[in-house]
Image (cartoon, rainbow, N blue to C red):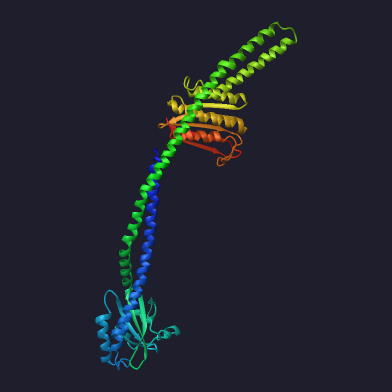
Length: 427
């Protein structure tokens, strides 16, 4: 799977986070607009109820209203039917006296009915302010309003002729509240959402410039790393050449000379000369092993398998049981071979120096256009999350090379259960 460039990846993250912020703020705005609409609807219902109660209904209450005079009730009923009750807002009007009797209602069957009034209900016959609450439709006096569903009940005190206190009630549909909530949202939503989108668009060029700066910095770092790697390769080849053509050849000549001198030397000098020749040859072998570690002469001449065999030979010389498996016919590019060799070399070096392992295996295979290297050992293991672990600096260095090649390096290890270093790149 191809990876996005750092700039595009940063912009995608910015756009996703910006869209999420717009959605979250938008949802919050919808909720706040609904709450604001409900609050405004309640205020409108209170104002409208006060206007009708004090401006229209209260002045129409005549002397015979409390005694049930039909003409007095008809006068109030005309005002209620013509100006108060309507299909979109108020569905019911009731007027109570302090005894719990419904003196008037646009539902005639309620007129004259009596219901118990508690202390709080009686307190509502005093004062001038209107109050609102969700109507309790389970009460028997509200049985005719149940067909309308949830209702908002607004009530306030009024006076009959002679100053007798009454309580005026108006019942509003829930659609009255919902309509004002939608109106508030339509008024504020475009400005709110538009402002959020505009802010995100204004910041988009800034995010682009920042991402481009990050990408330039990453390219510069990759170039420096590549130059360092190339300089390291040149220096490795120079050191390997100088050692091979200088010190190794000189020690080889010394070894031959000591062997020749031992043939004609009398005892016990002959034995000492032979021992010196053997030690010299052993030193030559160690130097040649070191030369393989410094720069593998077989990597590009004989292939990755031969170079890894040479590296594993140095581990075998230190007592580890090694195994190498390179998939037959695996086609690896020159850069992939070099990358796999560097990673394997570093992993094997860490295994030999730090793990205390008895078995070490290296496996190279390819599948579906991908190449994979695995280095496994049964050593003491370590904590991969530890940034300062001994021997881990080399792995962190080759990890940069792996990422630069578009691959992925993974280190799996558990304390006491060995380690696995794996690399996967395009073949």
